[in-house]
Image 1: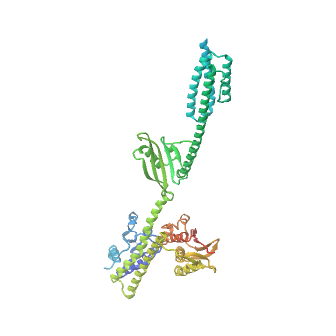
Image 2: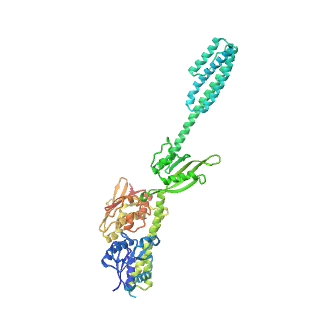
Image 3: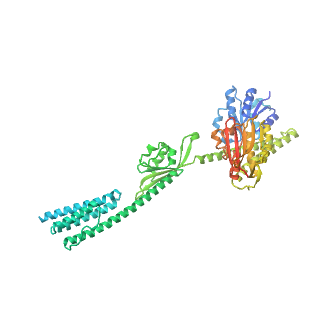
Length: 125
Length: 481
């Protein structure tokens, strides 16, 4: 069974390109274009992994991650994408299952490598 | 016997002249002329001595009636408070000569007194002028928008102005000097003052930051402290002057600029991220067919355009504000501009399921304006209305004549602007906290609107808003008659 990755980004072009990269690598993906939608999808589908943008209208990536962590027994390992970088308060992230923070612009290949490393067994070689 | 009479005569003259001069000088002392009083007292003393001695010597020799006459005359002058000729100088004997001397002396005294009166009057005028100047200086200090607090050598509040009273919340009474600690309670500020009083000799000028309150109410001042140093060796602090300049606004502008840079870089990075990612996909051969290749190239193209638009917006506003863009005003119809904007915005509104209505009067209201600039301004307002209105909402553009202005109303059923933000949405870089979460933007759109309407066209922009109900942006443009 392929790993299921939820991608949340209000920049639809970014969400699509990440999805395409992961699909080409054999992963199953679903896309949400804001925090609220991401939250609902995550609860409904219980993905194995999440890639979310930080700055989104309504609910930010960190807020999304915080809510999901509070609600789910199994935290969803997450990669945070952001155009902000150094402005992030790292202390906020320590209690969240955020494995990496990748700053935009990013390399889809590097993102895929990070997802594979995190997923380990369930990702096909 | 003769000795006794002389002594009596001396006492009599002393008393007479002394009392007389005392009566004359008393009103002047009351006028507050210590120098004059001193001079006159000295003169009176001398006069009493001279007259007493001469009178005492002569009194033994002259007939009693004539002496009585002179005494009565002098007493009469004292009673009337007058100074003038004392004695008729018909006789050429000793008493006559004494009379002559007394008369000359009295003339001298009269001149002196008149001179003193004159000087006193002059001094009064000078004091009035000084008083007026003091009041003027105080009024100026009072009117300064910076807070001014002056403390004397004893640590008492000597002078302060309205701005300082506002900052610290006290009422200054110039008639009562009170210790600064009794008037101002802020320990931080008191520490600044006390430190200045203790160490101000070594560093007589200091500029420090000082803040009051927290959160939304937080205000920051730049406090310029100066000690007033006195003494021959300049070794004594006779006071401290503190001037408080409110830098809250400057700090806010600095914060907004930093926010702006952060916003702009974020906005620039978003399209850049797409361009970078799709390019890599193409390079890595991730496009599986011709259609996908074309799709990736298309994204790269549109994202490049988007980035370019953003840069243009930033440059436009900066060029507009610096007056580099030539203004080309013509006689034009506002209605036509509104129609064009409505046409351009319709696809976006349709996409978001928002009803965009242009209720345009058949009358073509005319203004003197730069078409491109006004178009951009109206477009920004309408585009905001569409962006900040949830799906299913409505945006209505209308125009009408109000007094001598053509008014453009852009009303939406959007999220609305909280009261604390509505006064500031036209400020450059400012973004309402809520809107920053809902919609992306640079905080430049309305700043451009304000600049175009108010600075370039001499009009006015206002906003009325109710959170949860919507906003009405109103552009007033001077009408052509």
